Length: 363
Image (cartoon, rainbow, N blue to C red; front, side, top):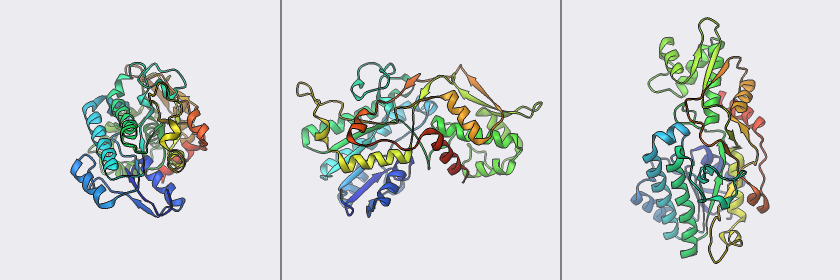
């Protein structure tokens, strides 16, 4: 890429897309293209075809996706499979037809088997069954990887795939039903702290910014308490102590990567890596597993993560682990050796990242 290249970031308003946009701007790229959902419906093949024909981007980042946590993934299985397949199929195919020079497809480490070796190397893909709760989303992402590989092999394109671990950062989704675990915990613990402090101004401000269903800052205290209780955020009337319910046992181990680190890795790959660089390990003329893990190689339990956030927020209440709810995969740590060998390493550790995340959320 050069600084005047036309670069399309699909999903430029989201967690990773916005970070990629900012990273490119800071590096001096001047022709960035972004379209909101209203401006371009990525589920519509004709609309995507018109966009590529008119704009003719030279480079494409596919950061657009239907995403969510364990609840959303398990509840909206058909929607997650259909929408992700449509988004990536439309973009990747039009990138091929319009001779895009390079494309980067963003997947997820949930593509790996439930019982994958730890840490998970790229070559364990498709070696055993997936985790059931996010199987449809994972299948869509695996299809995206294989579409990029297959187009490269058949058509000579230069389409790459990166698999980020669990991401968090500015512009994250804090919806209590649909968000991932880290932003959900930050919001729950923040609201629990506000209940402890009887800080109703802060609670109403939070609900004005991000209503929970029909409940917003104008709702009555009784309505707000009922809605918060539905999501496991309660204030014990006798002790005046808050409690936070967390799904599962708290034992699963998770790896977290700061979204701006992820963006930096994506731009690094686009600037420095080509598909041919990733095919040197092919066996018997079979090209497989050319995707690249992006992670820290470090993990923390959900319980310890909650305790860390509790410390940062100043919450004094208790956690209640609801073991009737699913844990999901017990361990999911990436092996980042491939991206390290290519020359990139993360820079933000989880302790600093949570500080940054909570400060951003409060602002």
